[in-house]
Length: 499
Image (cartoon, rainbow, N blue to C red):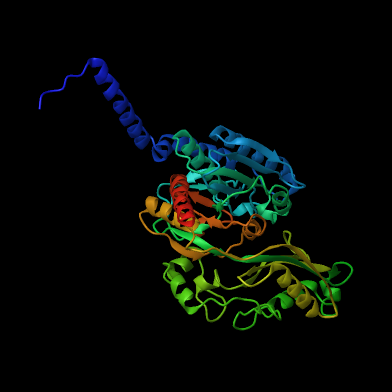
């Protein structure tokens, strides 16, 4: 066969497009979202620190201006990241921040939920550094450093991962799903205005899945995904005795002390086996099968380390269950705060006129928060002696949820974690409550993926809350893989359904 001669023009017309395609492919490979993260780590951290400096305490009206300022911060960062139609949506309480990026109606849509409000920092005197002056410190658990601040993990750090992951996908042309953001400012006070917002904006919020990072994983070397959350019934009780505070020497022994009576009533809510004594409390509990309990037991748990970390000599709880089961598959009743009488410096011999307590009950599948609240109220009023008057107030509640582990949503999240951690995540049940997860399912008809990157040791709701830099960056690295795998799996699911 003879040689083939081509002109210079033919050569360039052939080779230049190939070189261009090769360069683009390799640039996209090199300049992926992981590389973008590495190039912008310091900025991503500094932005989070700025966010943490704003004291967005939703429970205290004195911070209302700061809560609004936080919403404005989030809206600004969503716009800068590339979101469209960003708006700060007013509610009767604190605003909800919304934004979206709709790239193709044929692609699945991910609704990202998070919250920017935080718990009160009290007791402030127990913090090692001011709660709204974030610092990064190395610890044995986090040799790479951890951010100490109120809201570091719950939920500003975890919520902000999604904005930075979205920015990374936008900047590297890797966004493979439509995305909508709904970031609220009232989660820590029960999300009272979120339900009406969702009902009013169902069309705007249409999606295929809700992606939530407001939970924890087992450990930095043991990724996990929560497939269930407990519900919540939150109550406040008041026990009133005499019409004024009394001199404990003159009246003590003849008049009932509301603080004493309250303690006796609370103590009676558990029996010797630490079962809750409210009649009907366990009637609707769906018992977990022996097989599921065995699967739960496979998750690594070091009880000695657990006790050492908490500074306790022994664990405590319902007889017949392990510590992991007590904090995940069983309902509980806990006193969250109790007060009455004189608590100031020095002494004051007083018999208080009244005493109060706040009590929360964590609920498991089968239980209903309204029913449990009603049962608690009826029982607490029934055990009050005639020497006092009792007032019971229900504050807020939420329903327990379970999510399937065979859905494409869960499988995409599991594959994403396996990609970045090098390990298949363990499905676990969380002990906390996110009441709006059940709300999403009821109102929007979609399941949620609980894609948490915090740790149980991050001191949520406590002094010295923290969030590891490893966890923060790992979340930003992992989230884009969820989008990629979810789009692929949904495509495969749709093809199978069409055949």
